Length: 397
Image 1 (cartoon, helix red, strand yellow):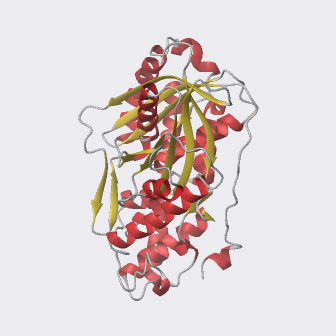
Image 2 (cartoon, rainbow, N blue to C red; image 1 turned 90 degrees about the vertical axis):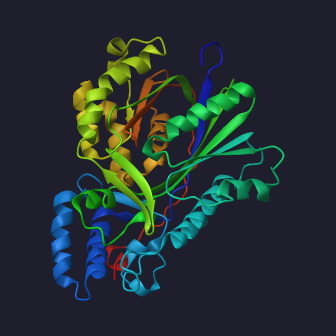
Image 3 (spheres, rainbow, N blue to C red; image 1 turned 45 degrees about the horizontal axis):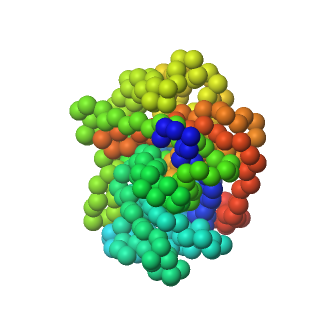
C-alpha cells in the first residue's frame, strides 16, 4: 500500500439488529433459561444461576445493553420460541433450525444495506462466524439485484472476532487487480443463536453474558476523495502453542466457544511488540506517535481493554471508543471493530490525520492489526432505528 494512492476505508453503515435490551434484563432471562432447561421446578436452580452469573458473567456496570436479532430474550413463553423452547429441547434448537434463522437475519441485513444502492460493488465480501448457508445471503442479494455479471462474492467465514482485518486484506488485494473498483464488506454476526442453556460452566457464562448480535457494511476503494481512513499497514501474528486458548467449533446444538483463562496474559505478552511492528511497516515510530493516536481495540471483554491499556501505557481517552461500543452493544464478534471505526470517523473531536492503531483477537490465538489514518471531511451517518422493549416488565413476562 505504498505510493500516492492508498486504499481507503469508508462509507460505514450500521444495520442494527431488531432489538436492543438492557443487560440486566438479558442476565435475568439467561438465569431463567438455564433453570428451566435443567429442571421442571426451576425456582431454586434459577437462584443458583443468578449467583453464578453475578460471579462469572459481565454485569451491567461493564455492559449496559446488548443487541439481538431475535425476540426470544424479551419473554419467557418458552413454548412459542423457535430457538430456546427449553421445555421441548433443553439444549435449544438443533443446528439446522439455527442456520435457518441465521439466513433470515442475514437476508434482512443485506436487504437493508443495499435498499438505496444503485451502483453495485465489483466485489462483495461476506464476513461471519455465526452461520453458514449456501447460497448465502450475499449471493441471494446479487441474484435479486441482477448484479450477477458485475459483482463477485467472496466468503470469509469462521475467522472469529479478528475477521475484519483479513477481510480488509482480501479487499485490498482484489483492489490491486482492478484499481478503480469498489469492494464492499458486510458483517452479519448473530452470536445469540449459539446459546446452550444446559452448559452451566463458568467459561460458558462469560461467553453468554458477553456476546451480542451486530451487522455493518463498509467499503474499500482506491483513489477516492471522501471521509474515511487511509490504510497504512497491516500485521498479523499467531501466538506459539496457543491452539487451545480460543476455539469456536460446530456442534449439534449450535457453535460452541471455549476461552482459556490464559488469553488476556497471552495478549499482553505480545501486544507491545505487535504495535511496534505495525507502526514500523508504515514507516512510523510507535514510541513517538502513540501518545497522539486513538486506539481501536477489539473488546473481547472488559479485562482485555484494561490490560491492553496497562501494557501499552495509554490514557483512558485513547481507548474510549472501544469501551463505549462494548458498554452499549457488547462483543459483536467480527462486527465490533468496524463499529468502533465508525464512531471514530463520526467524532469531530478526533482530528483529521489522527493515527488509528487497530487490533482484534481471534482463534489461534491470533492478533490481527491495521494502522489507519483519519481523512479530512465531514461525515454523515445513516442511522437506522432500533426496536427497544418498552420496559423491563414488558420485555420479560
